[in-house]
Amino acid sequence: MRIIEGGITAPKGFLAAGAHIGIKKVKKDLSLLYSQKPSVAAGMFTQNIVRAAPVIRNEKMIKAGNKIKGIVTISGNANACTGRQGLLDNEKMAEIYAQMLHVKQQEILTAATGIIGKEMPMKTIEKGIRSITPNINASRQSAKDAAEGIITTDTFLKELAVELDIGGKVVTIGAMAKGSGMIHPNMATVLAFLTTDAVISQRLLQKALIEAVKVTYNMISVDGSVSTNDMALFLANGMAENEEFTEDSQEYQQFLEAVLYINKKLAVQVVQDGEGASKMMATVVTGAKTKEDAGILAKAVINDNLVKTAIYGEDANWGRILAAMGGSGGFFNPEGVAISFANEKGVIHLMSEGQPIAFDENKALEILAQRDIIINIVLQDGLEEAMAWGCDLGHEYIRINGEYRLKT
View (cartoon, rainbow, N blue to C red):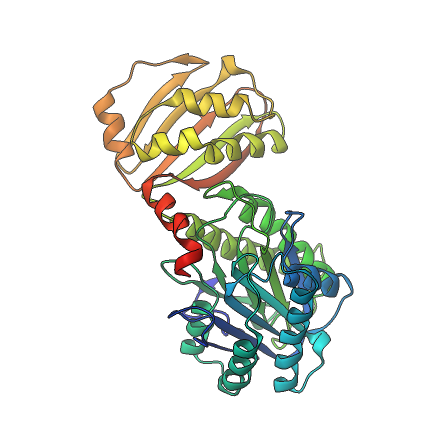
């Protein structure tokens, strides 16, 4: 696998565009993606029972096995909790883009992010789609414009592309994502879009996405809030002309490893860009009885507001970590727990076998003063492990979200 310069348009046959059309005050708010050949599509969607119109429609289309030619995304309006009119507006958005591409409406997926409960400005959206669609192309700048068109409070673009040599063919995967706030485990915690020119069945594409989401987007949290609009979409148009993967093949494993790599990178970037975040924490749990227990315990630590505020305050308050684990529902024996903090400044051991360790507060402060902090939790219950990513919680998060609706 090779990391290459590029984003969503890196694979063969994918074109994109992004622009400011007037939904938001200043920033880009429309993102268009087009596949020159019909793509098989996979998707993962929010577990929130309050679901935005694009989530409802896309999930049905992917379950039906629709071949896909494009995705249209708006930013600044979530089209969530907008009733029947929101569903009709979402269909209209797909219809307009389909008309511009001379394809069927059922070949277009939609996405939206922004303020909940706000009426869709359909005249602005229609005018924008019609004016921007002729600009779609495969350039690097167009990929960046498309990535910029999906963001809300993000402070940087989240893009990635890789190449694989598979069976004498070069297979490329490109991706873009957005996410900064309203981030919580249970997919999809962001808007994430992936493209590939690989020849792959929809079943295996969906399997690869499920595997990736499970250990990436489902293992991050910024604020414990589950969005109404979250989704990850993956399109494969087959233009690399490789032999189709089989599930037990080495080629599929290569492909899966690349998909895991890309989504982990994007998921970690979402946490690094957490609204108001000044620190990123990675929690590593080892020695758990089951994989499920390990995941529950790791997520409990990065989700806990008292842990997050302690990290913000650079306080080595390991008791909050243990308390978060104890209330999580995950199994562990408290008498066998060891906890330490680590980063490039070293390691500080805080407890061992369930007992506190006298530690150097100055050394702990030196470690906690850094941007990135690893919380290592070692159990004595089994052989399973898990990793989760989160960030601190401070004053800036409150400021951003206190003003969000009025300033978007």
